[in-house]
Image (cartoon, rainbow, N blue to C red):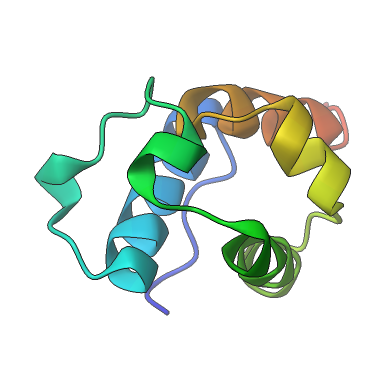
Length: 88
C-alpha cells in the first residue's frame, strides 16, 4: 500500500477510496465515497481484505460487522475516525 494517511476523517476516507480502487481494479474517480460498498463490487471476501488492511495500514481494529454496519467509504471512515483515541 501507499503512505499511511493522516488519521483524520478526510485522510481515512481518501485512503479507503485509494485502497478500494486498487483492490477493485478501478480508477479512484470511479469511487463515490457515498456509494454503498456492495454497489462498488465489495463482497464478503473483500470485506475481510478491508479489515486486514485497516488494521495493518492504519492500526485501527475493525471487524467485518463494522464494515457491514457502515457500508459506504464515507460512513466507514467516520466510524474508524471515532475509534481513534482522543487527541490532547
